[in-house]
Structures are given as C-alpha cells and as structure tokens.
Length: 175
Image (tube, rainbow, N blue to C red; front, top):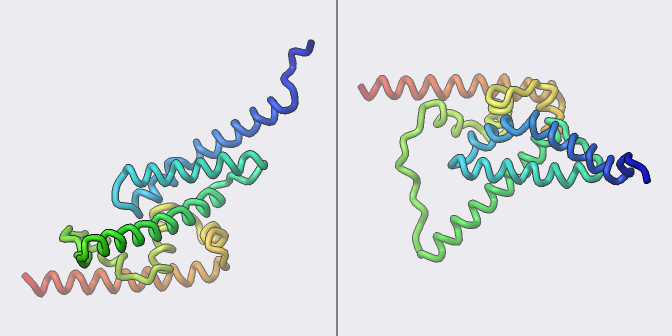
C-alpha cells in the first residue's frame, strides 16, 4: 500500500492551489471593479462570487486564471447583470403600468461627468485609473491595440476635463 497520493488527488490539489492563488491575487480588484459599477455592496459581492464560480470551473480544465482572464469574465458578468436589471425594470414598469422615474439622488460632479462620456471612453478611464490596468492590459482585455487604447484614453481625458469645466462654470453661474 502506497502512502503517496494518487494522480487524481494530486491534480485536484494542483487545481485548488491555482484557484486559491487566483482568488487571492484578484478578488479585491474584481470586487472594487463591481462596486464602482453596481448599486450596492451586496450586488458587487454576488457578481464577484460568480466570477470565481466560473474561475473554479475553468480551473478544472487547467484554464488560464490570470488577472486579464478573470476581468474578462467580470466584464461579461457585468454586461449580463445590466441586461438583467433592464429586463427587470421593464417588467416592473409594465406590471405597474407606470413609467420609471429618474432617481432624485444627487451625484457628484465627477460621477455626472463620467456618465456624460461615451461608454468606450468611460470604460477606458475606469480601467486605467480605478482598476490600475496598463494600456497593454486594457488592449488585451478589450481585444484592440494598445495604440487605440491610448487614443481613447486621451480623448476621454479631454472630454472629461471639458465636462467638468462646464459643470464648474454652471455652478458658478448659479451662485
């Protein structure tokens, strides 16, 4: 009788190690990615858990669990979440026979300016400054060239600056 673990047990142990290493390296970044893009901490944590559920499945096939792969999964989950939220809101509106009313929450000027950007520009700014990715990493994540990302980033910064200046001027005019 051998005391060494059999091949199946060793592979399972390797899988667990790969998964735990990916989880330790990426969980906080992915959670923050979701937290900035969702309505509450519980939703962000649920979406983050879904990323790691998929990562666990990928680890079975010795799939890559790098930061970029996990953020790619996170982006897909966020898109699915947004589509689901829209469907739910539309269903509630039709069930109640009412129109959805915009929120009365006051947003910060930066958040308002970010909302005024084109989605591609906003995403490149958030991935760069909030998530800390390089142009090369973002280009891999978005499946485009690093040059295109740098151009988008330049345009996004310029547009954000313009929107913030316009907001500042309108606030000063109201005083």
